[in-house]
Length: 532
Image (cartoon, rainbow, N blue to C red; front, side, top):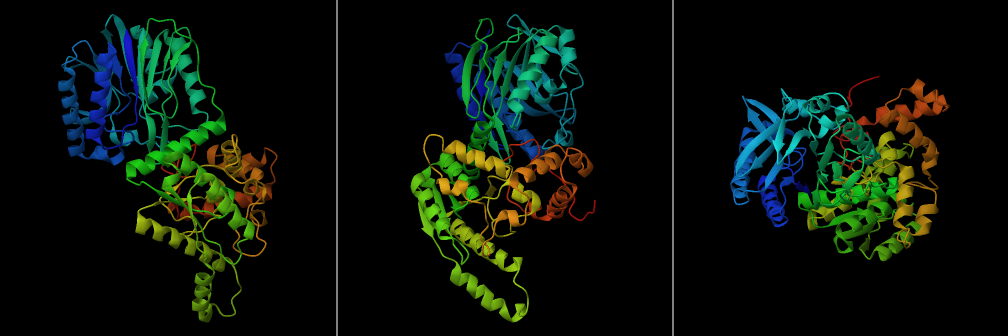
């Protein structure tokens, strides 16, 4: 059987645009003399549609355009297609995969396992499948599963597909990326293929939608355990495969930093494109976080579409200013220097009657950050630029950031990137040539909001901080469990207290791009007014 894998980038809610994209792929399938085209999970509405699923008019619109696709497919009588869409049956909503041919639906299978953890809320919207069926199509007994269904491993519903004796399992997915996920999928699908004795075709969505990035990496896995075809990660691709051809065994062994880079670039590109932003503005401090953010933005949307603004205060070092200029020159972006000394002094003068005899503290530091935030937002309002905030996950975790200051922005690019990985990304983007000046990478990190300030005056070394944060945030271990791994109790307790105390800041942060197993976004839901 000749099968066209359609690894595409749908836009959530854009049913018309997604439908038009589907029709073009059906044309392509016909040109290739394919027997079957396979789209991804909930392709017609995009994933995740969230509370759009609660609006009946939206579901009606999806099904109206699905019928248009059915009518369109009638001109290709030898071509079938599998597509994911939400459908009502008996007043219940299902996450469904339908197999259609000659303008008619000949088989449908609802999703059995509805994920309800981390970023997933499917039990909020959908009813699980009542039964598992198979279909004999073009001399192959096929079982269709949907994303999470595969992660049941050798249990339900894969055990039912094995009992049915299917020779081919087609899994349509919208599986978000996180570090390690691509390798994890390899293992789980090899396990399923070995257990069922079936070939597997896996078709995953690609692209960025809000805080999630979908990597694609669709494949054809032979029952022998060989990956006969693997599509590219992080980009749209269609590929015709022959399920009867021998093929070659290959599966991507991607570098951790490389995949993080690709996910972040795609996340920026799609967030800007799908939200209607053509250009981005980044505050360049001369530090590594803003430098890496700027490089990622340039690689996502092009140097002509990125503006860098340096905003030195009385405490900014001259090398920070020069480093920012060199970075802008290396990246060939427009750069503006706006000194905030006079604005900062006017704030101090204005507040002096009320702050008299008060010790200088973080208040004065935050004023500088908020002036910069206002300037960036002014450029955003005036020119329609998207402000990319530059704080990393380590800082956001412990509150080493200023509300309405450096946290201002429309997208927090590095909010799920630990500080140690920021350095790894800087080295990665500098592999072929020095894009980020070496001095930015080697100098000690500092917010430069008071004389001789260093991050490590307040925080543990980032290597230690990131280790504690990984165990507490991603592994969700307790203080005692973390200390039990040989870490200093006082340091651990201090870091955990900072994480818990700063939830109110994260609640007001810009959306970020998820690349780890637990990000401060839609999958992190902690109480604010709480003590634990």
